[in-house]
Amino acid sequence: LIERVTLVWIGLSVVLIITIYFLNKLIFKRTWKDFFEILHLAESYDIKKPEEKIILRDSEINEFASLNNVLSQLLERVETDYRNQKELTANTSHELQTPLAIIRSKAELLLQTSGLNPQQFQLISDILHTTGRLSKLNKSLLTISKIESNQFHETEELEVAAIISSHIKQFRELIDKRGHLLITSLDNVRIKMNPLLFDLLLVNLLGNAIIHNLKNNGKIVINYHGSVLNIANTGSEKALRKDKIFQRYYRKINNPESSGIGLSIIKKICDYYDIEISYSYRDHLHTFTLNLSLVTVDNE
Image (cartoon, rainbow, N blue to C red):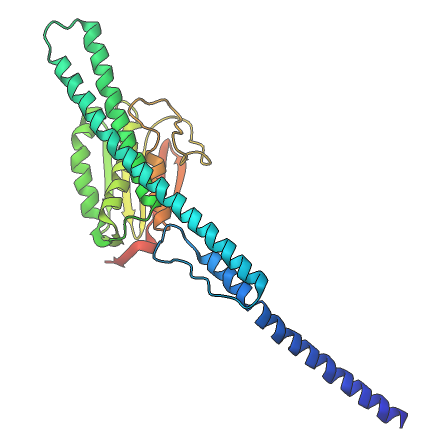
């Protein structure tokens, strides 16, 4: 009798424990369902994608209902601040172009004035040069703002080799003037990107390779095989700091031709498409390597 009573109690205890476990699990799941839904929406939220707006449904639990209200108000303030900041950046950059253009045109007219002494001529030339740099910097900052605001949705299939060759033709006069040796090896591989962003990416990479190259008898090497693009150039004898190279206004050498923001634009474009970019220094060559596998269409 004792053995049977003991077995019954053990069986009832096991059944009771299992029942309590599954019952607690069910209650926990139903009770915290709204919380985990809020958490999932918050984790997937991207302020740069306004079409993916978070919609919080009403909850029967007072605490979660209060959390929904607070989160909704917070998101509304964040989106308003972000939108205002984006509009301010765009409007400021746009409005600056007009006075910069006026300053440039007035300075060019002054240069054409007769009777200027060498000192006056140099001062006006400095104004023109500084105005040009400021205009370029303003456009670069506006471009970064547009990239961060996800304003480049359109994509096309692009022939990388043809586009690189086209840009090389545009830079050919400057390359020859500086006496640089250009070596290219390009595969016929297509990618899918926004054409404006890809052009901007190449222009900054090629411009960087020319500006920061040796003054005379430098070398530029461009390789594109498979889905890997390498652009290398001779330059300073020391490697750049990898932890700072893509930061805005970081310059190893104070080059007046550089705005200090080109590599930052390159990094923004690469991040936009999840393109892996790396820097290395070997055999007196500064090399930037881009892995375009995520945007590659085919390999012919």
